[in-house]
Length: 128
Image 1 (tube, helix red, strand yellow):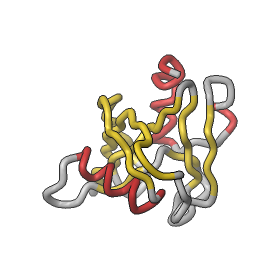
Image 2 (cartoon, one colour; image 1 turned 180 degrees about the horizontal axis):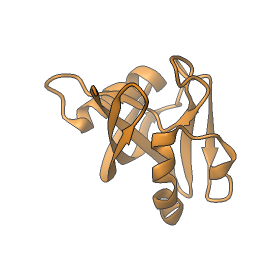
Image 3 (cartoon, one colour; image 1 turned 180 degrees about the vertical axis):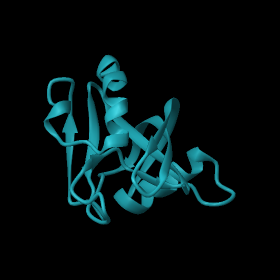
Image 4 (spheres, one colour; image 1 turned 90 degrees about the vertical axis):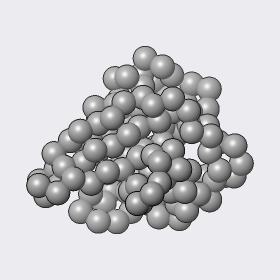
């Protein structure tokens, strides 16, 4: 099975986190933490900064690694490095996603998370 290496930003603002709704592909409509694929020669942190700039027109500060999620989808294996992040500059403009929401501990379960992202929710609830 093919492995796809990606990064995800858990963008935090006080007690809220930023979630996006996927706007394309087989997983369209599912909610996720924004990010994308790591390109050859990039560190995970560099990839995350680039992806958030491309997808959300925003500059972020990449913080601590939360976890690396390993998840088997039907057609590929996902290896996802997830980092705490903060907005440095920009307004989180949606360029590729259908929707976005700021969620807190009480609202984080109100969206339908993609399966790989679900595994992070309990860890995140403890920190927001």
